[in-house]
Each structure stands twice: as C-alpha cells, then as structure tokens.
Amino acid sequence: MKKFILALDQGTTGSTALLISHDLKIKARANIEFKQHYPKPGWVEHDPEEIWAVTCKAMKQALQQAKVKASQIAGIGITNQRETVVMWDKKNQKSLAKAIVWQDRRTADFCEALKKKGALKTVRSKTGLVLDPYFSGTKIRWLLQNNKDVKKAKTANRLACGTIDSFLVNRLTNGKVHVTDVTNASRTLLMNIKTMRWDKELLKMFSVPADILPEIRSCSEIYGHTKSVPGLPDGIPIAGMAGDQQAALFGQACFSPGEAKCTYGTGSFLLMNIGSKATLSKSGLLTTVAWQVGAEINYALEGSAFIAGAAVQWLRDEMGFIKKSSEVEALARSAADNGGVQFVPALAGLGAPYWDANARGVLCGLTRGSNRAHVARAVLEGIALSQYDILSAMQKDAAQKLKRLKVDGGASANDLLMQIQADCLETKIVRPKALETTAMGAAFLAGLAVGFWKSKKEISRVFQADKEFKPKMAKGVRDDLIKNWKKAIERARVH
Image (cartoon, rainbow, N blue to C red; front, side, top):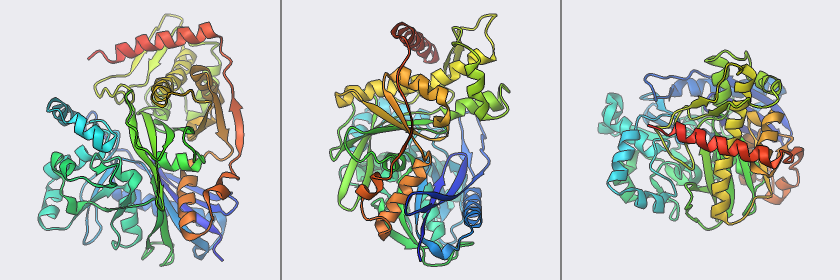
C-alpha cells in the first residue's frame, strides 16, 4: 500500500528529504548540508555531484528514520533553490562544471551592458523579471563562454543544461528525462510567461541554444519514473515540481488571489497570488508564475531580499557573536532596543525593490555603549525591514492592504523576529504548525498528480496555524525605526 509522498527539498545550504503521510504529518525528515564554494569575491558555486550525493543520503536516512519500505512511496515531489544553473553531459549525466548559485554576482557587468542597450523593456514585458545576475540566463551564457568542458560538450552535442530541478529529475530517471517546470523556467530570463515557452528573442539575447534546455512542463504531472537510484526501487513516479518559493506559496494554501506568504531562508521571499493574469509590477517587484496544475495557471508578485537567515549565519560564522543560529533571539532580547544601531543586510547587494547589485551591507549608529545584543537586534530588524520595503511595493501594485501574512522557513521560528515583522508591516503574521511548507508544496503537487490527494480543497482543510503575531509597537517608535532604516539604505547604496 502506498502510504507516503517523498518530498525532496534541495536548498542553498543543504538537501532535505521528507516522508509525508495522507493526513499531512511529517513521518520522517533528514537534512544534510553541503559545502559552499566562493572562488572569487561575489562568486558562489556548488558541486552538483555533492548535491546529488547528499540528496541520496537524505532519502536513505528519511526511510531509515521512518522505518518504512521505499515501496510505500506513492510519488516524489521536488522543490529546489531557483536560478542556480547546472551543466552536465547528457550521455553519462556527469556534471561538467560547478553549479553557479543564485547568489552569484559575476554577471553584473553584462546585465548593466544590456540595460544600456535598452533591453530591459523587452525582458520585463516577456519574463516579468529585471536584468540582474540573480537569474539563470546570464549564468548559462557565462558557462557557455568561459568553461572549456562546457564548450567541448556543446560542440559534441552532449551538453544538457538546467536548474536544480532538471538535474535531479535527470539523475532520478538515470538520464532518461530532461524537463523543468513552469515556475523554474520563469526564473531563467528565457521563458515567456504568457506563452510558457522558451522565447527565441530572449535565447538570442543571452546567446543560449534551445537544444541544451529542458522541456517545460506543468508543476503537477508524472514526468518520469525512478531508475537505478540508490535505495529506491525502479518505477516510483516523479510527479511534482516547483521552485522553492512557489512551492511554499502552494504549501501555505495561498490558493486565492490576494493571499501572500514570506519564506525566511538564506534569503527572504515574499509572494502574493495575483490570479490568472500576469500583471507587471510598477514598483520594482517581479511577476512570476506561481504554478500550473492541469490547465489552471496562477501568477504571483514577488519580492526577494538576498540575505535573511544568512545575516544570522554571518553573525555566527564571521563575527563569532553566537555559536548557534538559534541563540540570536535570546541575545537580541537581552537589549531593550537597538541602541541606535542599524543594519542593512546588503551582503550580496540589494534585491527588490531596489535591484542594486553594487550595494553593500551597512552597520551604523555605533557608539561606545553599543554591544553584541544591540547588533543582534539590529540584524533581526534589518531582516524584517527588508520585508517592509517589499510589502510596501506589493500593496501599491495590488492596490490593497494585506490583512495577514503567512510565514515559514527556518527563521520564522524566531518569535522576536516575527513580532518585529508584525510591528514593521502593521500586519498580522500567521505561522503554521508545519514550517516545512516548501516541501509540503512539492508533496501536494506530486500527490495531486498521482491521486494521493483529490483536490486543493482537501489540502487546504488541513492547514493549521501555530501562532499569530499582532502589531503592538507604538506608532512613534515604528516611524523612527523606518526613518532610520531609509537613511541606512541610502548609505548602503553609495557606490
């Protein structure tokens, strides 16, 4: 009897495998981190072979933890770090280069050159995105032009390219299937979000040949079946796929236009369901494909900050303020306020709504009395205020004030951060009982495709809130916090 959906959540710092039952209980969870590579300032890379190895290890550990047989898996759902690009040999599935990660900024100059040529209008109208190194298209171009093994494979007609979802499906099917889904494709700068197809004009702009790209499919269908995967029997359907933020929107049951969620991971990502029309933002946000299930297509407005949880990791790893990330809340609570300290987490440039690749992190307002607790509190405030800028732009585009924001991701477990977030946004924050909403979204999509769940309605009934945070900061205090934040942002953008 098929009792579980296996959800694979391949993230920026690790791979997670979860076994999810029909009543949406997490039977087992295994997470394994992998190495980050920083060969040059602004460059971020992963080893695709290590990603595959830790993904297999996580699957094995989850099955052992649950003490269940792999034959009980009804289907596999995949969610992944978006925009990260992998190149591999389609004859033997071996990766040809380090994956270029979404955080990587090496193509900033090319993006600026395209802007000067007036390409932004075309890119915006077709993709809903902006010209920024964040997205996949310029990374693909860079590898095609600068990596000798990639060039050699292309000449021999052996080159396959894709985002992490494509790479994993290819490995899970032993090289048989080369596909992506509409959400991941919508983040490449190469897909037209109205036609849902690779766009010839965009492919030419980024010098990307169509024959190396995967076939674009929906988010919920059977793409292929497992073959020769360590620890899994052949024949398990791979049936759900979505980029991590769209998967979280689906996993939070934001099925109606106007519903929104924010995921706090390495970066933070705020998405609002805007329904079936791809309305373009006028406020510096992105328009992206939320999901496609059957013939139904939903779009979303999105704003992302490149650094969120990574700011806490910076406090831990580089500054030595804490030994574990979980310690930041207690440290920040030990200060009554920020003591005049402001922190702008532009450690990898600024994302929405500024899109300033050259911005740098700022820690300011320090005095002789400033201490570790003030800085820790300022870091949490900087994470929350980044969402303030995004939501302000989102409410302007949507012409409505958000009544509540659903949250998930590791840092959403931090009660102080969530209270600061509610205070900054003047909006109720709702945290679900299950914080693994990204993996849940991938599981839902796979489960719908194989009949494990019958409908979105069945899924939404099970959504349960764990805690709500309501605004309680005095108006004057909030106004000063935002005024000082805006001054600090100006400093971060001085090039």
